[in-house]
Length: 346
Image 1 (cartoon, rainbow, N blue to C red):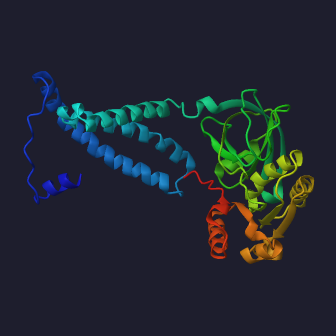
Image 2 (cartoon, rainbow, N blue to C red; image 1 turned 135 degrees about the vertical axis):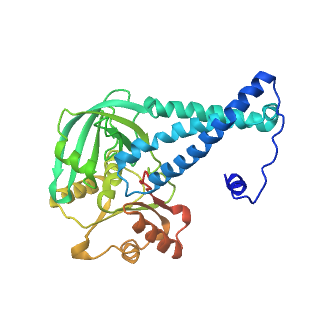
């Protein structure tokens, strides 16, 4: 595009076109389509820039982003047309043409799969909501879902995409329970953070059918350090609930200290976390921010004197996690000993 703009400004002369290859009919067709291909490529380029900007601007509502993001697949197919017409015929018999053909074919297949709504389809199973528990002070709801037999199981700390309304689409939630093939039930904890999750709070009820896709994620507490420190800030406590329930059923892991800083306080929710911690043998540290102040790296180190032997697993606000990582790295914690759940989808 830059060279085309420079030619348009009169700073550069357009080079003459080569004769090309192929027979006369093919060359005539290419010549007839060249102008269309150039126009399609230019305007698709502009459209793709706008679509990428929409994906990066989190102020734009998720529903609009979800709809617009799929248009990137159409943009790709338009650029395939642009490339096929404008690539010189002799290139296809050279290594650059072979590589280009493989990339265009793979990308076209991926775009068609996306447009057909087939992404993740092989990892989707049906489910039914069996119970819903509300924690009003926290604006949180815990839903127990019974899954169909095709669910492959999951590791504690992983997440899944849940679809309740196909018009709204799938939303990611951490699974707050370990897998039990006998009951085939999993628990999701949802906090009202936006329009959709607030609506879920009001409308979700028993016997609601859902589709669950997954499991995904590597935040699974799997390392070889002799001690672990878990930090679940606010709704970030969710993967650690699953981790504690797993430890209660499979004792013998490394010692664990769980820090749970929260601004909102619900005695019933804290009681559930405390019971899970006792059953798992986890040492729980709860701090209510308005009452106890902010949790600090120094406070964690004072509570766990042998923190240098531990791995740290953090789930919560991104900025808080980054600050903790920088502080502990500065005090000598190995880089690979800090694990942060990066749960932002855009």
